[in-house]
Image (tube, rainbow, N blue to C red; front, side, top):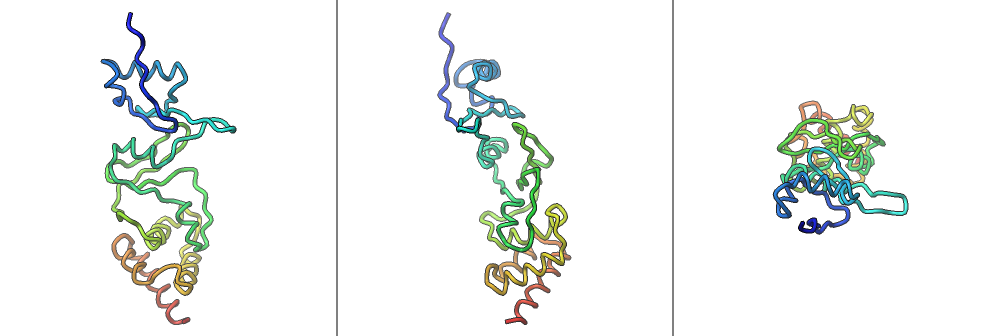
Length: 195
């Protein structure tokens, strides 16, 4: 009987069942065998992680790596509290899900116990901080912040040149609702009048 095929696995990398086709006729069986041997950890939806260990235990996969494999290299953008809170607009939200904008899937998915909220929406290729400010305004309820609070934060960010008024307006026009555009316009006017 021939020796079992041993694919070369990289620690921290996410694999799809189909990645094991080159090692034999039945990639599903091979993936199950690697799980049984402890070399792969099932995440969900045909995705597996070759875990990397730290002194605290198994390290979860990088969100970008996970989404890249799940969406099959389709463009996506990670958004949410990490990007919103970094703007300093008064939001200090923590969400139990990672927000992912993409052009393929919509819905909530769980991988290895972590939740991802995927939305099929338009988004820029290289988003500026001003895009994430508009995104925060659109998702203010999810972030637990009021529009009034965020508008005050926008005025400060514009006055201190953390955000650029024309780029903010352009992003609001392209990606925001009428309400968001009005908030941005008021903030830009208020910041300009205080100079």
